[in-house]
Image (tube, rainbow, N blue to C red; front, side, top):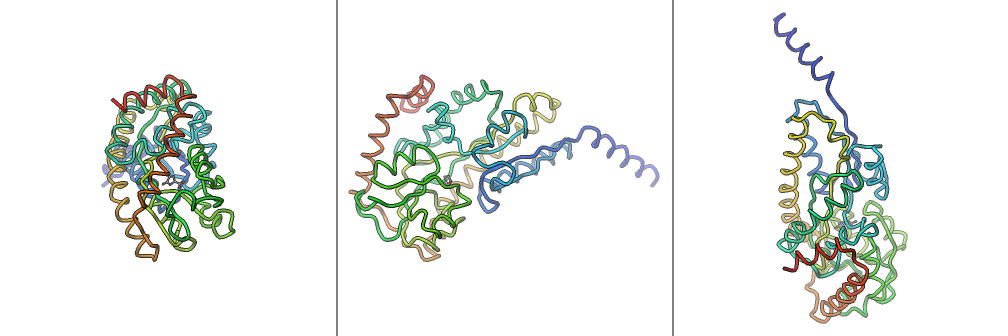
Length: 319
Ligand code: PCA
């Protein structure tokens, strides 16, 4: 007994001496599958390192607002965090290719696009002392409105919720009036009349109880945008080799699990929208033609200002 107690104490001391606590900010709420996947990632790291690396999640922008998460990792306020990858398109359009309408619209496309994008953005992030750990897509983006939308003209004048520059441009070209709103603030933005339509995934529709404020959903599957989890390179380099290996292994597992979760949600969350009373309808050819036309216009603008890095992503993807 004495021996066992002594052993436990020694183990405790060894762990306590090297144990590290990492705070991890994320933008989305606890019911979001991305957050759940990251919670599992944190558990996996804790288990694999026998508690030597303890990651504490701070979801829904509770530690840092979404817009500040990348900067907080960069200046080492936190070692790692999650954000919506295409938010960085203002730094380089390479970050935003996944949010260009009708470039990659299926999981298969999205996987090929990520394969093309990953080496390029890894290099860009390295210039800022950041390293990607894993990236997971949202289900393809669909259209939420009150009443059915038959043509692009029906979007004219609608106050439209947006979450990045590309969606803002898309809404504007459709004649709508975009307003930037974080996912956690969607219900309030609709309740107060700040917005009356949106494009997002079935997951975010369900997580924000869209049936409380819209009647119709069309799976226009316009793009498949991703979240990314990024770690500060210097902080990572200071981990011992075993812990580094454990983090990278858990990240690889989290990326595969996250893509599977996303695929499952595309179906189950669309069904949940219908179960909760939303009319899910197939978009008309006229509507899709019109929206694809906007996508083509956006791609022209994109090409006129894209960096060599951004061009390379699209080139590799298209070949
Ligand atoms: N949900 C997030 C990003 C894309 C998505 O499906 C949002 O609406 O903010």
